[in-house]
Amino acid sequence: CYAIGGAPYQITGSALGFFLQIYLLDVAQLDPFYASIILFAGRAWDAVTDPTVGFLVSRSRWTRCGRMMPWILISTPFAVLTYFLIWYVPPVEQWKVLWYLIFYCLFQSLQTCFHVPYSALTMFISTDQKERDSATAYRMTVEVLGTVVGTAIQGQIVGGAIAPCLPGDLDVLDNSNFTLLGSDVNISLDETKRAYLIASAVICVMYVLCAAVLFLGVREQEECGCLKTEPMSFFEGMRMVMGYGPYVKLVMGFLFTSLAFMLLEGNFALFISYTMGLRNDFQNILLVIMLSGTLSIPFWQWFLTRFGKKTAVYIGITWAVPFMILIVCIESSLIVAYVVSVAAGVSVAAAFLLPWSMLPDVVDDFKVKNPDSSGHEAIFYSFYVFFTKFASGISLSISTLSLDFAGYVTRGCSQPDAVNLTLKVLVSAAPVVLIFLGLLIFKTYPIDEERRQGNRKLLQEMHNQDSDTESTELGSVV
Image 1 (cartoon, rainbow, N blue to C red):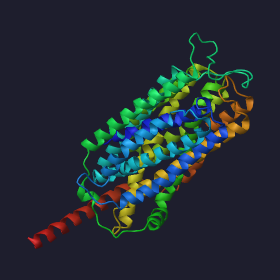
Image 2 (cartoon, rainbow, N blue to C red; image 1 turned 30 degrees about the horizontal axis):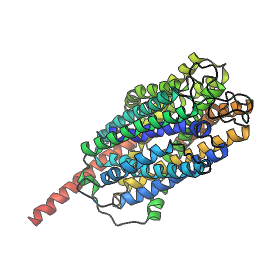
Image 3 (cartoon, rainbow, N blue to C red; image 1 turned 60 degrees about the vertical axis):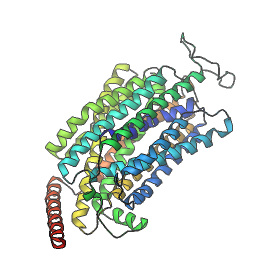
């Protein structure tokens, strides 16, 4: 039940990550410059709300259903509504930019109110490291499966009604009535818009169902979540987490590697559609990536328990590099595209699992070094998400602006050579450089398997001492 609660974030995230850029450009028909503003502002706003919500969650009082669950319950219906409205094209042309900016930012804020307490919930369902690692593995499996579901729903429904491309002089053609070249079926732009709405409605239903399973099936441990500490201000919390060396190194290392995969994710649909000329197959290729990632999660969970988490990072993240290079060096081939997609999915699985599997280790290390400071798990998790999302906003906006400068043609059947070159850089050269920078930083990460096991023993001793103290105090009162 805990793992299923992670699906909504990934279902909506994969749909937005893979399809929002191409939707804004080719369906809503926004200028690339305005699309870049929406993508950056939404992600930047989302990043800012993460530490804010994390701080508020850490100050929340315990209720009958826990400290995290009320946030998840209240935010869900509003998040669903705003997500649906993102995929609606307003009839008034001059309101389009403002419409998408408002609802994209609102959805990101409401989803943060769901995801920050959910991710911090890992620390409140068990005090045992092995149990938390196991819960994280279940969660990552379901989350990667969620990306498959999101990609499948969005891709297959929308793929049956692809926005028509417009060859030649775009100013002469009638955009509203033009049909796909070389197709026997007349598909209007209105039908494409309707397909996006249907896909978003299906995803909204799944969001609600998964949230209900989480709320009804998971109980927070009050003895873990109600530790009393002196309230601290927002800036004190920020200074606390950003001043802790292992946390900073972990965040910075995965910041670069996450940014690499975000660049690949955000531009892959455009790359497959235009540079490789596989416009009618891109949704299936994306689905193969996610299926490969889902099937690889159990392997990486076994690998990190057998060889250690740092070794898993080095091998798992670098696995995608040769295939990123291969896909831009060969001529367009559907078979090669599928082979590369399978290989990339294996690395995507590692990128999903490892950051969230290693963050509890940092929190435990902090507890050992600061035994008098407790109850700040949500702050650690929220700042962790903050940097990732802020990097995502930068990557998306830079990508879209780069396409604008290169001369991207909205709804064009083909793109200028400069656009194709830009897409190659965005899905290959730039991600490869970022991956190697992230791995260089990660080499300085100090928490290895020996230190992790030592922290586990120390925390267990501290927990036993607290239990003995509470029993003694209770006996005295009786």
